[in-house]
Amino acid sequence: MKIILVHISSILRYPPALSVLQCLNDLGIDLTLCTTDINNETASLCKKRGIKIINIEADYEKHIPPFLKLIRLMIIKRRLWQEIDKIYDLDTIIWVFSDLTLKHLGKELLKKKFVLHMFELSEKTLYYRKLPFLALNTALYGKKALCVIQAEYNRAHIAKAWWGLDKLPYVLPNKPYNNNEICKYSNISNKEAYTVIKKLKYKKIILYQGIVSSERPLDKLIKAVSDLGDEYAFVIMSSGKNIYKDIGSENFYFIPFIAPPYHLEVTSNAYIGVLSYIPTNNEYSKLNALYCAPNKLYEYSMFGIPMIGNDVPGLSYTFKTTGCGVCFENFDEDDIINAIKQVEKNYDFMADRAKAFYEHADIKETLKEIIGSIK
Image 1 (tube, rainbow, N blue to C red):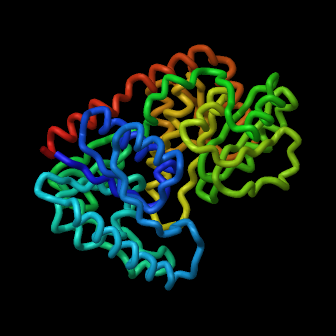
Image 2 (image 1 turned 90 degrees about the vertical axis):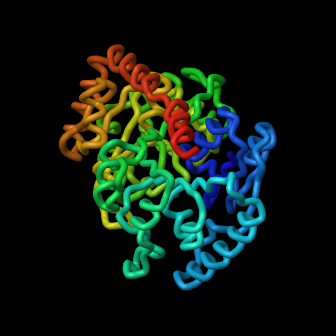
């Protein structure tokens, strides 16, 4: 069996995809990574592991007008199939990472054998969110796929109902690939991050890492930690802009994007991890935020870091059943402070439960099951 992993944009920005790449390689699968962005880190990783690379240079991250995006999509689609068709045969399976990749492959994919691995929850795949009538019928691809993969149990059932699937999608948690080189309170390679964390050596770091957007508000959290005083610091580590730079808190710090797995060096120094999800109008279903499946859950728990988050099913169920975190009911400073105090009161217990939560998820075993089913 040969697998072509297809991923639009840099795979380093998508820890779930990076985990699958490395785990499938560990399982001895003949892999080719087909992507639009190969940087030095990805090239080095693939060379070390003997993973073949197809690089479709597309400058996908460049912001351009909507009509040019559609033209770019068609160009990328043509070039993807030109390269894939050169190596595809009856022993090959195409592993489609996300709805973004799905729309760049289009109907030609229906003629092939493929796995549909979704990162987000959406009933249809939009070509452009401001033009909802331009959509791909994801159900058609879900039914045709050898199997569908979702990151969370409720998402799997929702997708099955939406798309009329005969079988429940596999649930593959967004757990990062196990990297034993990074331990608790690790040294930090990135100079800018090292300077920030060194400054906070004697403070309790409340860390948020990930995308900063209206779906993931952090202003009340920053203000709550500010109210707690100088013993604490709120840190955001993100690839986005620092939209909170003028919030007026003296114990708020921002660290720009650090390529995986080295961002975990910063994570390892956190006291409490933060998760924040509010349903908003975007290209995904509002259920996407309610039944969130954040890789942050595993990135924090890897180091036994307890968590706080707002009360949505994707967080509250995990916290209540495992004991690794606390949800605050309302997005206000008092509720957030109470959640932090609850964690501090039970810190050692919750740290142990976080570690147990991390150890319980075994993505390699799930991938073995998936490979066995599609053979």
